[in-house]
Length: 327
Ligand code: FUB
Image 1 (cartoon, protein in one colour):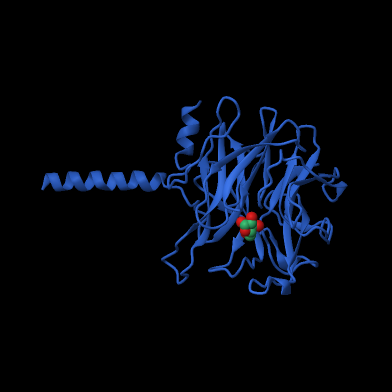
Image 2 (cartoon, helix red, strand yellow):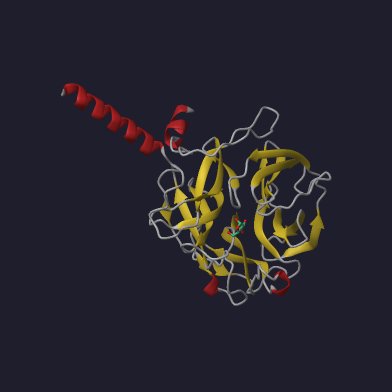
């Protein structure tokens, strides 16, 4: 009998240990379906994630609002959303896709893609879908955000998936995915409410695969342009300037099914990759895989190159202990 109790206790503690560390997908509560995480650490020292929001069993990425979540330990998350809705906009009625955020001039900015029309997948020539990038502003990192210009930043080219880099000198650079217009950059005006000088095509060293969802960050004076190559595998380039010329270094996260969208940010001494996974949701009636935001540690080699990242169930579930250990 004693052996049975001991075995049961061991199994229970092993189960507890594995579930307490099992972090992926991130637990935002209420089974909310989120994708396209953009991570930022603001002055209060917390991590904020700005995400898009899939409706249950969503149809062709028809999406209606954006969310923010915050955490001090990457394990316990607070839901602040929705922080902006498509219905708040006068110029778009659909496609609340991957947002990014920035803090500048004492204000928080949400730069977001939205659009209208219809994508006809059977007869593409009949498609009327169009997307552009908007800017919303708030005094708080969690909104509510208000559309600051009442129109898109530009209407041509078709654009989505913005990534905003605020450099150490305060200059802001906008990267995005565009229809026949990838690998372009725009310098933003100081108030982030317009672009200045137009769009500039960057030198990508001769390698320009199909992509969406760029994310640009800076580490030790090196700029990293990261993106889902062919919309699936995460790959990266580096440069000495935010406008390139860029050098391609290859894939650091392999594809797993559907699209992937990510961000990379340093938090309490650790580099974290936020991304989304397509997972079964057997607890629902939805028979398709649905998107869920997840996180992994990301490590650099001494020369600044990025080590390969595997998808794990544990993710950053031991983040509090990892931070404690490095003290
Ligand atoms: O979530 C809608 C779209 O799917 C995003 O904008 C793309 O990056 C892809 O994740």
